[in-house]
Length: 458
Image (tube, rainbow, N blue to C red):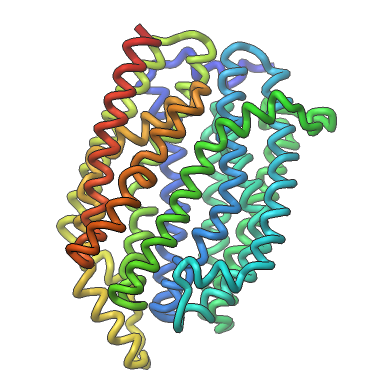
């Protein structure tokens, strides 16, 4: 058998390796982000601005359940990368088997609960007034596909932990292309409205899941598991859940932030201000794709080399990941600072038969989006430090510092700020909370990361 590709994580030069791992990851994130971006453009133009707000309300709920799969994937991937680095292949296989079983059990239970309490969850996340009916229609259909999304997220991360970023990239591209194709037919051609948008999203999840089954069943992965690996093992479960809880806490915090923000913004400016944040949220997912791609490429490199006790390579990978991500983050910020209105206008409907309310919402968005976007993205040049810092501690299996650093930006800083600043400064207080929280999180992470490198990797 040819030399397994995971060994390259411990042998190739760090700069070359980081590029090799990050480019496919960035492309995958880009395509998924473009999917969200173009999907929002389609929905906004073919259905209306309230539909974008409805999707913004629903996605945090559905993604939280799907993030259970992501959390299990990241927690297990950390173990798998370190196990492969230490040449413990059997442990890596057992970990993957436990991830599959755990993902199926947990997401199935959560989906049943989510469907049972839909009428309570949707208004709680800001789906009020005219937004509710749009959100309910989208929510009900999309929730059926969430288990497939969770399994896809988990499998995608595992593939990347083996040092096979190209397969992971394809797994992210397939559902994006499928979703946009079905969007055109279901929304534009068949005129199914929100239900068409929901079914396009759900079916795309299923297609991606089928592709990952193909990858793992045809020998393209090193993790050839059998039924015995699916049996849950308590020591592995503890390690998977402790490390995965960092990712889950991050997603839970994102959902909580959206809940709080949508309610605060609704009180300040009604559906129109919720639509402003919905557009910014879509741009956040798209614009930072190269930074997130580097973080994803960095994770298996740090984990593998830490498991192999090649600490100098770990240290070099941290510095280069932060450098590359900071450069790209600065470029993103400059683009959005200079052209905020032009970017936002892509999401607004240009149909001639828009109602008076939709016309008013469009005008409100264009008047408020520039200031909001510039403040939300103001600290983008430095977010690489908290992002890579949290990823590093998670990659090496240190759940507690990873958890604390991950929660620092939104949990310790942003939420208190967004409750206090709008009381004094209104809408501008909401947007400045983003920048202040980013800077504070950067300072805290830089301190702890520097101390860790001096102590553990000297």
